[in-house]
Length: 399
Image (tube, rainbow, N blue to C red):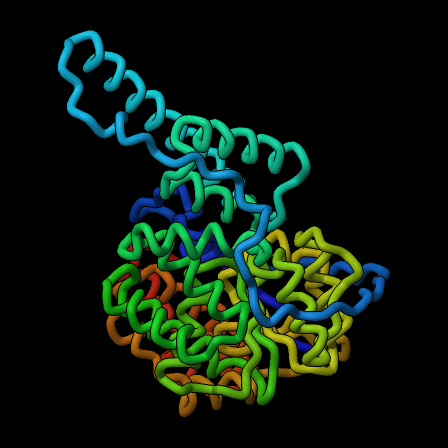
C-alpha cells in the first residue's frame, strides 16, 4: 500500500530556521493562537532530466591574480589628524565605508534567503560585485573587501587566496571562520574540517539543539545514503554529528548551497555521484539530482524549503527527519516505527528547546495514522499526546 504523504504547514516555517546561509530565514512571528494544520498534498510528475559532463577537482589552491589588486595603506593615513576639518573628513570617510559595508551585507543576506534558488542570477551577481568594488575602493586592503570578494564568488575556490588573507588578518571573526570551515570541507581536509566544527560549536555560535537535531537527521538516512541539506547551519549540524561525534560516517552530505562551487561539483562526480548538466542551483536542479541518483538512497533534509519538494511529491516518503526519494511506491511505516522506538536519540524531543523539534511531527503524525490503521489504539493515543506536547512546547496548537 502506498503511503499518503502529509505535510505540516508549521514544519516549513520551523525548518527554515536552518535553511539559509548565515541567517535566519523564517522572518515570520507566530503567536500561541496559530494552528498547525495537517494537509495532504497533491502529487506532481517528475520532469525530464539531463546529464552533466565530468570535471576534476583541484587539490591545492594558490594565491592567484584573480584577487583584486591591493593598494598598500599609506603610513600618512595612520597619523593623528590635528585639525577639526581633517577630523570631519575622516569621520565622513568612516561613515561612508560603514554604509557601503552595510549595503553589501543587506543585499547578500536578501539573496541568500531566496526560497527557490541557491545561485545568484546575473543581475544579483552584478549588483553584489558592484557593491563589493565600492567597499574595495574605500579600503582596498581591508578585511571586508577580501571576505566580500570571496563570498561573492559563491565558493569558487579560485578566489581562495582572498579568503586565506582575510582569515590571516582577522582569525576571530565568525563569518570568516564559517567560510574557512566550508573551504576545508570542500577540499576534503578532514582534520581541519573537524577542528573547525569543534571551534564553531565550542564558541556557542549555534545552540546544542542543532547538534542534537543533526544526529537524528543523520540517523534518519538509509545505509550508505546521500543526505541533501540546504544551507550553512543545517549542514554544520549534520557534519558535526558525522565528523566530530562519529555518527553515520557512511552518509555523504551534499549541501545545495555549496554545490555552487565548480571544484566541489567535480569532486563529487569523481566519487560517482551524478550531477545535472547545469551550474544554477535551484528547484529544478534538486529534482534532477534526485532522479539521477535514485538508486543511491537519497534523503532530503526537512530544513529544505517546501518549494523544492512540490515538483516531486509523488516520490517523497517521510522517514524520520528526512524525505526519502523513491520512484517506486514505498511504505515507510515500519521504518518510522523502528526509527522512533530504537534508532533516533530524540534529545531535542526531551528538551524541546528549539523550533526544529516541530520537524519531528510529520513522522509522528504518520505513525499515528499507521497505529490507527492497525487498530493499535493505545499506541495511537500515546503518539497523539506526544504530538500535542511537542506542538504546545513551541507555542503551537493542532487542528
